[in-house]
Amino acid sequence: MTQVIVVNGGSSSGKSGIVRCLQALLPDPWLALGTDTLVEAMPASLQASDGGIEFAPDGEVVVGPEFRTLEAAWIAGVAAMARAGARVIVDEVFLGGAYSQQRWQKALAELRVLWVGVRCDAAVAAGREVARGDRTIGMAASQAEVVHQGVDYDLEVDTTRAEAMECARAIAAHVK
Image (cartoon, one colour):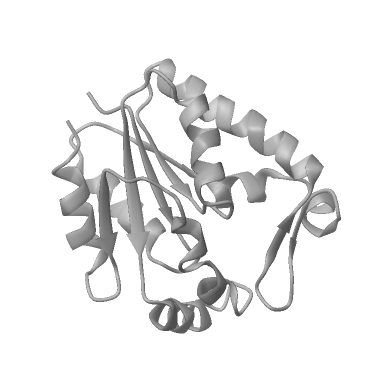
């Protein structure tokens, strides 16, 4: 039985909407946790420091060693929740491409994981980013492809033309 669904895609690609739809579609309760959850849980001092996470004016995301330490603990904690019986959907942005996936694969070893790539045309994601008003302009375009480099998926969906519910139904069909 699938214990963890890892949903990876760039900023404003539609991951969070898909995750909410998955929670509504899947018969059992699933926790939704993501990189935004981690960033929001961090002290404000780490959201504007060299050691933490910085959002550059051009949309680049720069992470430092203190962020990486907390992120590693958070990933291990998410894995521990799944091992304890919680079903978890992880809403992620693999800024390091394959390396990011490898860190999650190590933590989720021996768990049944469904790896899902969420693609979206960079121009469409950039338009959503502007409409949202809560993201640094440029993040969507800069992340649209880099987050998928070298990453292996069980399933990919594309939100360029598909709605969140349609993508969630495709994902739910692969959850065993």
